[in-house]
Image (cartoon, rainbow, N blue to C red; front, top):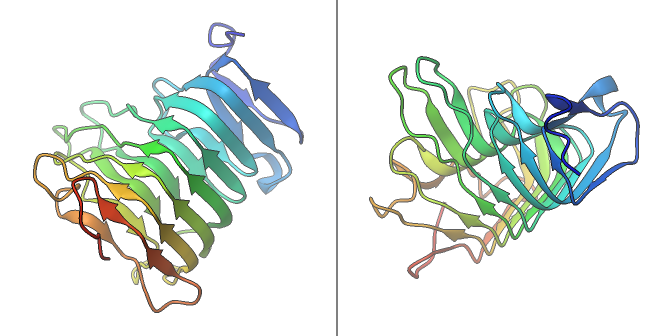
Amino acid sequence: MDATGACDALVIQTTGVVIDKSLVPRVESTMGDGDTSVTITDSDVRAGRWSDGALWGYNISATRVDVTGGQHSFHCNDNCTLIDSWLHDQYNPDGQSYHNNAFISNGGTNMLVRHNTLHCTAILNSQDGGCTADVSLFGDFDPISHVQIDNNLLKANASSISYCAYGGYSPSKPFPIATYIEFTNNVFERGTNSRCGVYGPITAFQKGATGNVWTGNVWDKGGAVNP
């Protein structure tokens, strides 16, 4: 099914919505701060010129999904699963200072990101708009907790990604401590500057915080990646 010509967005208004083998515009599950849910499989999401997540909200499960467009490919609040998917080509207009991400949460819990290719592709524009990271965890609106980032490929971008991942520890944020954050068995692409991002592969991961795990993360060309 191709729904992109019928509407600019699929705004989920109930629980148990299933999207399968479809071409769809952006998918939003934000009503009632958690009163909606959606499962999307074997589909393409084309968010186009949209200034938030191509997939955005609560209770979203995405498997074998190709996501393009939108400021962020997947913006999770709570209860999100992303498996076997490709996130890339975010919307970054020249003249705007958008900060793009492949997967981002600004506060939330219960997230599984497993066996995906995560690539924030935007390059630096004239207003310093561009990528923040392939994976960004920030405690802006709620604490970040119980997030598994496992067996993914984090693609390099030496133009505008500061780091390929932000691990949730942000002393300047309202909720600075992230707990039960697990980065396991991920591959970081070195890219043209051999650092994945402009400054390095990972920052803001607090190894001593409750439940945090860092293990098995390596460079694509060999060798361990350490936070």
